[in-house]
Length: 273
Ligand code: NAD
Image: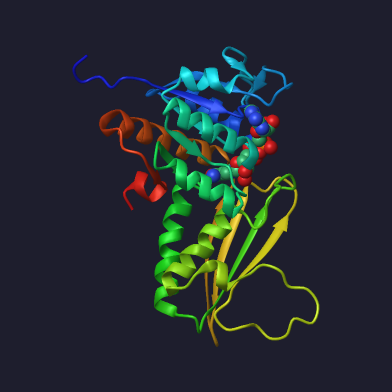
């Protein structure tokens, strides 16, 4: 119909997780999206309750292939292993995929990069508006200050998080490396213990804290002689990630419907940063 946008059918892979439940609530409340269903880990209950007390059971089961078949776009916040299975299904069904899972190995990331030659993939270690902006500020700061200012990245997350440093901390490290024109893999320093000697110039350091129910906190510290610049982001509600992921899914599905071109995208593309 003229002037009316078609509703986009969104499927949620791993809808019983912390992020999955936030996504169920977000898609359910969206005026532009329809929930095409969700998957749970094999053997898990298909009845899922959101934090605000709503229950979902319709179209929730273990059958990811069927969910791909009836969705316009899929959102995955599961585990690296499950995400790789979902990636294969996205390719065989030619469906756009939003990937929020973190902690991929270099080989797994290479598989994602390969798949993006067939289908559109939007991958982000963090879907918040604040972190997207912080990444570009960090890149600018690193370029302006140079390696004389030691760069350290500190992050804290809840006690259940399984990968470290967080995907967001690594993305912020990449922003420092890009600003300096160096390779993060060559310059990162993730472990310090015992008699390690003085700081090696130019290194990008990481420190990881875990505990309680912290949703996600990141600081990028540029420490010079006599002054320190500290850029930080505090997430207090994981619904912000769900909101960003649904916004990204609508953007990706619309783009795919309009021009059918694959590619690997991030939140900077969605936000036009
Ligand atoms: P979680 O452990 O609460 O949820 C993961 C869910 O996936 C679980 O319910 C698990 O049963 C389910 N799952 C695993 N394998 C599955 C399969 N094959 N099929 C269906 N479901 C399956 O974890 P979480 O806190 O929701 O985080 C999930 C991932 O998202 C982690 O990698 C985390 O780092 C990442 N994360 C990313 C962002 C972001 O903005 N990109 C924000 C928060 C978390």
